[in-house]
Image (tube, rainbow, N blue to C red; front, side):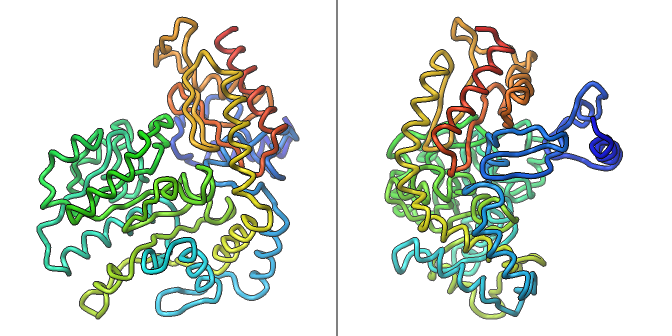
Length: 424
């Protein structure tokens, strides 16, 4: 280990607190944390000069690759003008352009308003607060209940955490949150008293943190129809699925669904800067006009010009690099690679999002105490692959710019790591 790496690790272990990380294990002298120093395309290099495939797109954010010259240039140009100014009572050019670009993805008279925030949690938080305040200001104050799905994950701020169905993460905070009912499917939703429901929240097509659980085909369309019939708002959390991951720009397109609120983050800036957007209809927006109805919510860096410039460059690349057309063909090849290499395991995939649930030779799961998923991801480092597990489901969610050869490299690396840990 070089002196530079050693010093960074000393400071990290003395002062840093990492998210979703067992700090006792992290600080164990026998464990070697990686210090990521640079990236190019789908590749990352650590401070020791070792090269890795970015197997989960840097926590599901990277789209066109690290250090893309077009996004780099857009950010440099913006820095020369201004990097940040307040959006509270002021506008800025890049935010105006980005809001218009996002609304252009949808038919007129649907999603026409954009509220910017910082990340996926706050995008969902905004949607929930808007939905509840809208009812208060529209003569239906009894509609105070929210509905979410079992094993859902919508973020970690307190409102978003209220919607989380993963007990390990959220159960201890349940009594502090909002009034939420959890259902496993539409049949259970239909049994609820819909006259008190304000909104239903769902990750369309696939649940990420729930080990890449896929929803049945047509389920989203049925949910939209039910919400229309019962005067319930539909909130779609496309923080993970947005921006091409599913094979279309937004997952809801695949079932011809337009929500009342659409939550976006992660891939919005191509994996460069924190920025989020909550999109909604003009009808909802109009209920907030006037000083007595103002939506009192916002952050210091809301709609910051630098993040908006990165987002605009990201969206431009979808056109100039023909990203969506490439993804449709590439995802089929990706699926074939997974089937060829992991057929004895359980594969769940939607477009370029996949989870491989590792099973024993007899098809049964491993005991949780064995931490097979974590051990495989640790072993994968030796084969030039970085990713994270969800229990014993290994997430493989490559940047959309990955070539077939690069995808093959990632799959082969994961296969080798599985063999190291589990045997043939």
